[in-house]
Image (tube, rainbow, N blue to C red):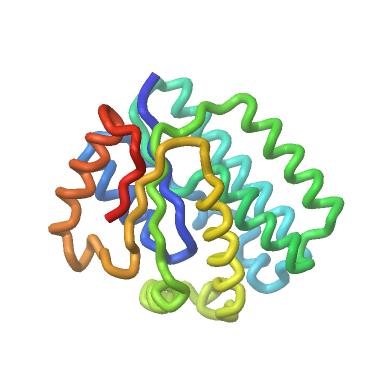
Length: 211
């Protein structure tokens, strides 16, 4: 069975860019979050309470299929978001803020934990740690209108959940990247160190790395 790396981090942290660059350097197959073809995304940003369950269920289903494909193929792969974030960050945030009902949230979590029984755990989670200020700047830079209309409080709520989640995460080894300081697009020289660290962690190290 191949190795599986997953990225984690707030919206705009740079997960897709890291996935693309690292997949090329490591020779891993990249898997990306299904954003463009999610039929509920635009509706969700207009009416989160009405469409939150639909949106999150679609993301969860897509992520499950990606991981199942990785398991079946036996190839080395890297995903631009972990399946854990679907439930522990985004669905939980929607529930806590009243945008997903208790009935919907309970149903969603039941589906989530049942899915986990059939999936392998990642070999490594790369957490891109970014401040809310950095997240907002990168969202503005990539210019998705529906994201730019979201109030900053939403990104702050996600940031708080990320901090709690990563402090208690124990599903795999963790490699933390300082997303405020490290931009691999503007400063590609960081890539060599990150790739070397990942190779070392996957083959040798049992200790979390922070750069």
